[in-house]
Length: 530
Image (cartoon, rainbow, N blue to C red; front, top):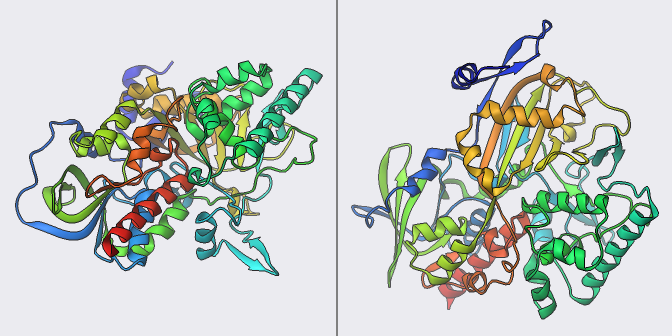
């Protein structure tokens, strides 16, 4: 056993001690550590709220607080509409929010979000963005996607009954399981046809039927429809953890049905839809998209600014920030401010002065996440079955273990050599304090334990581990959240304050964040020209 004092000493030195990693079965130090987040900056907000901004001020027509996808989309759209005097204040040293990318030994890998489902031509404005970025073009009247950016084969596989199989839905080995799969598929299709679901969610109606779904847990809805098969329930729970960061018991039935009815439906094996939903992905994940959105903004993005206070007045908005590089406060005055941050942060910045924001923030719940990027000297030893895929999941894995993405999958390198596996853990809310306090080698050990069954020599091959912790990584669409009146109110301006974040859609995906940013920009343009 590795003693705690040895563990602490190794962590302080930026290494992890892994047992049984050398030829003699001893211990080997593996370099790595926490990356991607300046935790101490975010925690400045936990201190007493500072006084109003004072001293000489910098001015901008619009200040956007936060450069996640929503903030970048908003600032970019404002600039395109002719409102050039925009300043984006970002806590971290790089833009992108939870879509930021990373690199180890020159190999790109994600820190958070890692793919974008291919949108349909009616999925405006996401399809329009893809066209603009050169991801798709029209040929002979049809959409042709750039193969370089589409996920290469094999897209996904599942470790099931000690071998890898293609796809993530466990095979129906009994007639009962198959009937349950078909029953759920019929319910999803009925919901899609009769009620309407879409991504982004603003494209779909909100009816009493949606509200009834939203009012109950997904598991309760499944129980009411007699859907109790263990394989089906495992898969649905995995899907909820993957998209929402929380188990099926914690999210609403609206969220559970929306996952399938808004996109690709639910297709049991053998129904003629065996191919996985096509996705766009990159080694650095959605960091590629974030970089494309940030590039045109140039010097409008001000990184290393911890915003501490926002005071909206009758004629202007005062913003107090802290310049982390210069280690001094900085005051901004703007005609309008867009708070493109999680709602809990926005509420703290305005001191609880906006009633619907305070209500929505108090009720909100966010899932903590861990992303571990593992640099290997070569491809891991494989079990029998399907070859290594982009997305690799273990059936029945310990709660929260979502498997791993092969970040090097898109490179299609015939030479082999080093590669990066990005392991994802969707943690229960109660684990947030441990995620913050425990040393990174402890979490690395959990990740490696979770993958030991499928890659028993992983510890031997590991050369570096960079871990990213998201204390409040994803908004959980718990029962009643999507239909919240407070969220609806925040989708309209509150005086000189505007709100743009995926939290307003009740769950966290690129499409929701991007369109929330566009909505806030459109509000400002309309007011500016009205």
